[in-house]
Length: 555
Image (cartoon, rainbow, N blue to C red):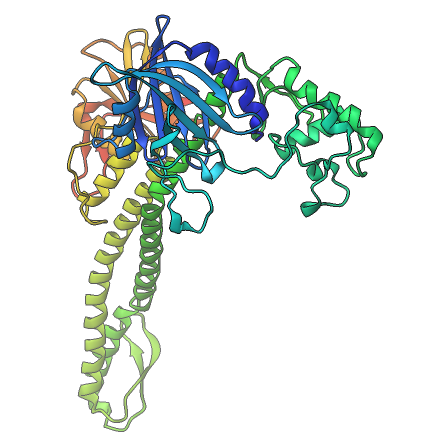
């Protein structure tokens, strides 16, 4: 995605127009690499997201995010030094992804101080640095870069702030293109790729492709002197043409790029575009990161349980002939007068089916001990069958439990959901008990209000369990038939529930189930008073009676 200096030149103009003169009401850091500045300006609330993580960026978002119980130290520093300050201007270091937020701040003594929050949006090197504008000294930064980290640039409190070196070429004016200065980076010259050979500060690779396309140059050729005027005009157009922020596939742009054909989704502002584009990327990555070790644990447990189940079932097969051992023992006992030690087998009629049978004998044992040997084998297999049957049931329950947690972790959609799932795993001793210095807020259950009836949908087994526990006995309960899925509750409040509400709840149950791809889906529903949690089983697993079944088609 072209998050280059060109993009940020447009973004900074938007932000300066919106936020200039506004007061910083609140400063939060939901994560160590994420800062949110909250403003109240012209009767509206604004939230400026500064992300220094994997998707480093800067833009307005629609709503604030919850903060951790204990603020990060840099958050406390910002609150003390710019909280309540007034935004004087938002500007950009020319041709760089470095943003300056200049702030007028009055300290505890009422003395006005000039602060500058420097935002370096540079991928994994991104940083937020608070600077005293009068001395240009760093007061603190989100990421401290010390002398001993093997890099030339130091970023620490007390150090004079300096803009990072950039070996790309600044585009000063038209003459820069025309006077023969080096435009091709000889260090990384590629064959048949003019766009990537251009060494122009502030342009992402995909933007340089658009530059070459707009200049009507052959990207597979080398740059000629008479190509330079067209290249400069195309470059100027990149900065001066109308802003039409848009999204195409996995990229967002300041306007539709001509070389990159497709159906672009157009937005009113660049901030809105970026908020929409990044809405789920950060959250999904954080959830994936936080849940990965638990998911790996569950998958390993599933694998071990499946292996155990296979072994137990094989043991059952091996014990299936226990009745034959018992009969052999009886037949040896019945014919013991015919036998003597050293006989290799007994051939006799099986009086249970009148069929001749040959029974192998141990030549080292007496006839009586051969009979006892078969009786012992029968008794051993009988005990093994009884024990293995119990183990199979127990292992199948384990697999159901692990699969339920795997499904929950695969579909988790918020940090609150993940916290509840992890706590449930700890309660069941699947993981070590989590330290809970403060009880986290319960995850929100999806709720729809339809014609005055609240329909609530569990997103995971923890929420399913909570729904059943909290529901009133006259509420209606829905669940997909013969598949795993969400529990759905209609809060009836002793009212007669209309058919259209029942249908809507059944559709939600079908949509949030493993059967959602089927054409016709059966959904059972009954009053909650007929739904009972099965003791000692997976969270959310219930039995129910007095149900009716409705068939829905999600199409």
